[in-house]
Length: 135
Image: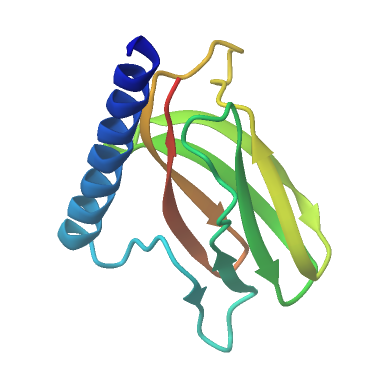
């Protein structure tokens, strides 16, 4: 019985997170959870959703594709735009890339549970999406 209540509460929390993500997208339509194609002159071809991301795990995968070799910065932020951490700032080659966030802030502390926005910034384009982390 105790385990059933625990599972039920996790399902409720996951549902609330999805509802919050949807509400956020409706308020800011330029943010997307899905595949984001970018204009032809862009160096960032696409953000690619990772269906293996589990909000109850301790990590999230951020996948994107680059058209050319460019300098890329990947940041995690709160939905209010406050920086949580910078995962990457370096030149990457053209092609598919996966960056893993371990749920920690820049100072090494675990981030609080919630929905976060990640931003992938290349030289000529920037795209962002959301990810949920529940502990």
